Image (cartoon, rainbow, N blue to C red; front, side):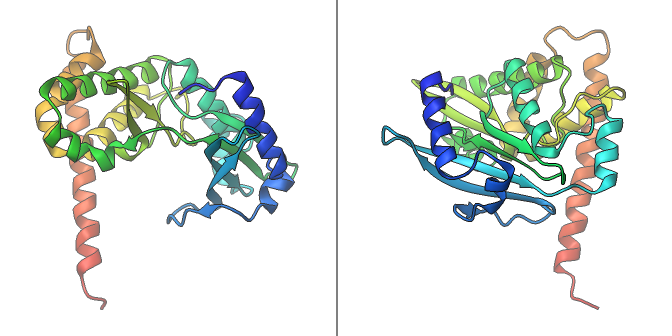
Length: 271
């Protein structure tokens, strides 16, 4: 999904009308629909619709970050991301993802203030998350279409990792599938935690791949996981693919045990 320069100008004008071109204006904004998601902590996400000067309607997301805890900032600095505020880093990650050849959002406006607050406004991506549409896709699409999805997904991850980036939350809910003129397009979102690991790169790539395998429909994993890995590795060195597969399966097993433990705890009566 590309945005031509004229459209971007109209969107920026619409943001200015709403006061969303500064940190002060972003934090004063009280419109739109907030997402009540547990664990967001110092973050706040808001969905809103903008109307441009030609009557076009656009869905965008406003992400606001309060000053982060010092431990979070220190960990980011040690990871090589510097001391920039969270939203500024997220906008940089969006740019890096696009440069890696992976389709994602567009960052329209971003800023931070001396108090450590920051904000970014991003466009919505088309389609539906694979978490929501994956089961239906597997049950209603042809073999050729399922193979096309698998190849596109493997190429997406391969491009990302080949560029040095890892996502860190590579679940099916963060990959959107869109069909344009009969061609499947995949978009990657939620890039706030993405980074370029300085060390232990194998561990981080395995984590991405395990999260994807854990969260995709069981029917897809059973039928397509081997094909996915063949495309992802392209021409793996001797033993490389096997090493990855073993590490991925160990990680997925741990995730399933943790999921089962949480489910048991949720159903047990309070003492």
